[in-house]
Image (tube, rainbow, N blue to C red; front, side, top):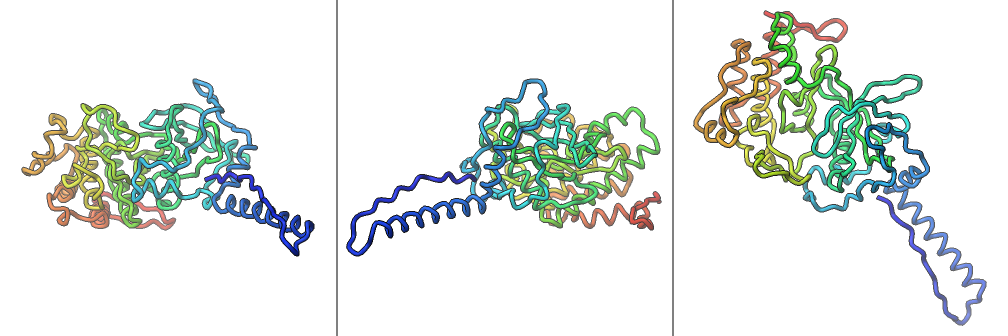
Amino acid sequence: MLSIPKQVSITTMDAPGIGTGVIAGISTGLGVVVVVAVVVVLRRTGGHRFLSSRRQPVETARIANNLDPTRPRMASFKNKSYAEDDDIYHYASMPFSTLQAKEIAADKLTLKKEIQSGRFARIYKASLKSGKTQQEVVAKVLKDTHDEDSALLMMAKINFAATKVGEHRNVLNFIGAVVSNDALGPVMVLEYCQNGQLDKWLNDKRRAMTTDVFDTIQTITLGISRGMEYLSKRQIVHRKLAARNCLLTPENDIKISGFGPSSTEEVAEDNSKGKESSSQDRIPIKWTAPECLQSLKGANEKSDIWSFGVTMWEIFSLGQTPYPDMRSRDLPIKLKNGYRLPNPEYAEEIHQDIMQGCWKQNPKERPTFAIVVEKLETSFGYRPGESGEVYYTAT
């Protein structure tokens, strides 16, 4: 955060034995000390970066409404909407200046087309310049009407991705962030997956089921389990795993997205309550483990396993909505009484067994992601290829 130097006036009084020249020397010395102290504070807090950024032109695409450079700058992050023990508060308070390798200059990123609009941000297809090459990426940009809570949340997501997530073939790659941009606030830059959301892809394939599609959905299921095993090893809880939060590359490699720092403010999803504040997040009831239906605060790997089972059900039903004839408010009592989703059309016995294991009422009886990965690899006749890639032969 930027520390603003204050003017300091020094008043002297006559004292025996001290001449005016000595007094002037002392005053000059104190002035130098104050200036040095201010510079040190700015450097330690990253303030020097924000000062220098004011001299840099803001290079962004003008899409739809022209972006107003007079909009308020990003928040100071002293906001109290988040509890101090929240992940969001912790990561938002972290200085991004310590992660210079992930910082992207504003003039290297060009916004092209809005893909969709979320609760607090817009998602754009964008172009990232690196030397003489251009890379297609996704940019998450705060809405024009964003408030301090939204800016804080975006900065938390950026720092979480930069410090906690790392890289894995089946996890959406964080490329970097533009933070020195007065017009837009912090911008998160991510890998672009051209084939889009898994749930939409599955719906498209429902009308043309083939052997190739069947093989692909099995590979996708294994990829999600591997990505989730990786996240669990890094002590990351997804909380909202679902087909809509998995993305596909042109080669149909699956990438898990939609996770980030947690908040204690998650609330049950109920459209009748109207719009929630930006510090609250709705719980997707049909994908959530019974023990987390009131709050996601206690979510862990075993609750993510439950969500993985529902995601598997989506995959092997080719994108159907789980519990299609049931209202979310009626689901908790049904699950408590032992009701579970029926076996989807394209699930084989091993998939059915895994799903039923994921939906054990007692979380301790559910498998870990490591166990699920092992079972799925066994069903594929897993063997590592000579190049390090993995090949599968259905057994």
